[in-house]
Length: 363
Ligand code: F6P
Image 1 (cartoon, protein in one colour):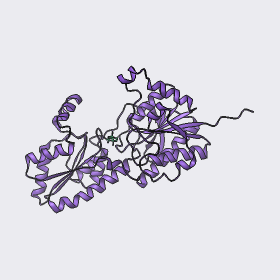
Image 2: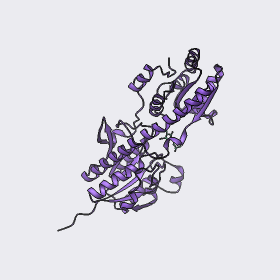
Image 3: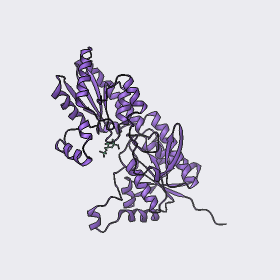
Image 4: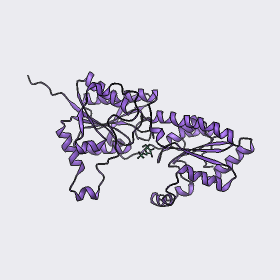
């Protein structure tokens, strides 16, 4: 009787790194190898490794002891194989064909990709090219459409909240306006949730454009009430009401003039130009993506990884693992691709923040 071939899947981490990637790799790899008897091939540096054929068979030791480690044992890149590049075309390269060729050479039955929006979009396009792909939603921005939560988000929220807590003491001691800039170009989930958790007085997010005058009058009112310090949590992609009226291109052009100024610094200038208050800016940057995953992320990544392994075992390809309420399930990649989950301005988190007198600079 013919023996059935051991199934093999490749796994890669693409886009920015974040806490929880290793926990998810461990989850999917352990369940797939131990429960379902599959082989796992680790692909280096995101889609770039698949283009270059940079991959190796992983052994159980490779995914032992990594649950608590930040970063990714596989390495990551922001490689976008479907993006047209003159350089590639002049060199006669077609990265998608190279991926398909390596997928075949590695004997893969499926590819598991851990990543954000761009990664899931590429996953869908590869699925359409005839590969079998399963996605796991990762990003500190929590902006992937179709899932309530992404892994990496809780860890980053905890880092940003701790930073706000620490800034509070200096704000109080020096009577200063402390501005903390939090990651999130298009979606403000992280600034909103950590701002709420850290008791920020003002929160600025891309989805709710602000008027600098509304913020300065709020700060003045606080000062008249005896609170001469304030904390402002601002998402890196926040914008003024005037900027929101511009097209994306016009906005880019305008910001290019100040390209060494981040949003936190721009806001500090806007405030200091109008009122006599001392502002200090802290840009949290990559701190938010670093270090060990929080307990919530370790559990979430493990659950997502296991669901990924189940999809592999059932041959349910072309899907992204997701969370709905407290239930882990999956949705077709075709439903996720090309969409973004931004903060609805009337979301309960926004309403809750308003109820505790947080200013969004929009009134
Ligand atoms: O996608 C997560 C994210 O952290 C964004 O919030 C941020 O704007 C971006 O990555 C920056 O990443 P990099 O500089 O690594 O491209």
